[in-house]
Image (cartoon, rainbow, N blue to C red; front, side, top):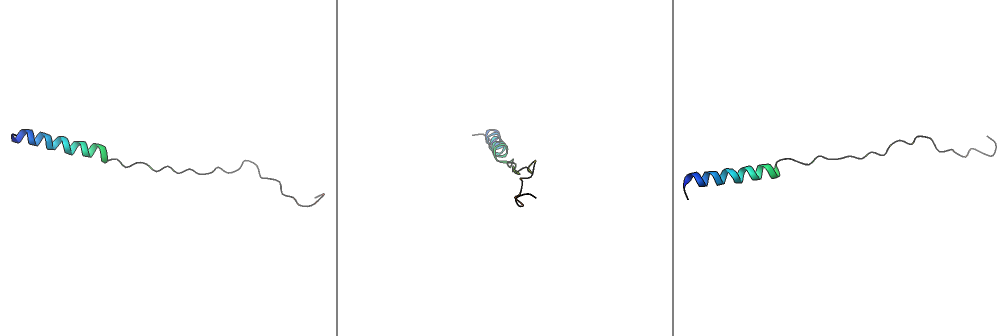
Length: 47
């Protein structure tokens, strides 16, 4: 092969590897929301 074809093939290979493996995935963090109301607590019979 000629030098220009080898150079073009090498450039295409490097560009393909850079496009496929270059971007890391973002990390998603899920946080449980605070409860809207507080559960009633048993404090005795008539308190």
